[in-house]
Length: 437
Image (cartoon, rainbow, N blue to C red; front, top):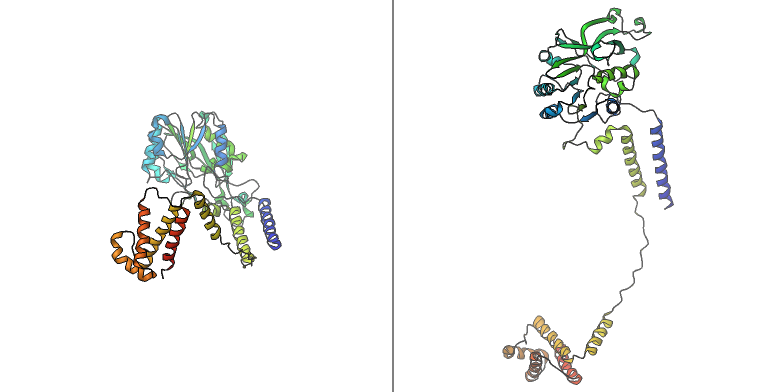
């Protein structure tokens, strides 16, 4: 027992030590872009959604309903604004029903903001000349963020109440450009590309030998954020969805820009749909327990340590241990006490005839079961009495006298016998019973 207790204490202390090490080390962030409302990672939306729910004057909530479902309630949705934030391009030419649902909501009076990387497949439908696309890799974003080129976003939307302002952002956060020449679109944010970070020298970077690649380009048709009046509402297009994430809302140089963008939807309650975000689900549509554990490094480490602890426990405690065999006392025979108790009950009751009839019943049952002789009815005496006489050694006359008298006693409604008569007839039955071989 002492060895087992020490082993358990060792495992407990070891697990507590590992837990302390995991809690003490710096948090390792996941820089993948997910926009999931329950994710607290940099490019999740947990903090962003909490901030919007507290700052949006008319209200803000998150729903999993898709655009078609919202369009079915277009009359009610006319009093709301819709935000669609997509990691993958949820608004695409192959999903024309989604664009139709947006038009239905716009005609009902909704303002709909779509934030995704590009709208290259919808240039004709949306009357856009060109929508550029850029590969975004955030793997080294935190570690090497200062050596990348920064772009400048220029807010030029005097009708919204905000003055013109420039924002210098990391190139991966500044979004792709849309080239628009149509007057139908009101351009809110322009993009100036190729701005080097402060204090950066091209000659210091061996990978960038051509200084001409770092030239500044600013054109008023290179748009990142714009809107267009359709029906009774405005359609907003934003090619920098990363601005509406946890990372942007927690950094001063991007938080102000994110709040300006969201202010476009502040005139009505805003509903953000997550219907088009990727779901890590199993076959039945739910996230499995092991998948969730595997997605969290601390949980995965704890799971593996638990399996290791169980394995060690089996190794050190799997051997068979001899236990003390308990002394089992010999069972006591209580048959004599039982017979005495039954006899006492019959004696106290005083029903002598009943005892004789029961003995006669046992005699008939034994003859029928063991030697196949039936003495229940007088009609079978011609065959049964000779057999019984040969079996017991008593004469047929004696046997018939005893059995006939017992049959008469059975037919009486209230038979009565004295003690002497009971003793006599029980002795006669016992003699026949014991003579059966």
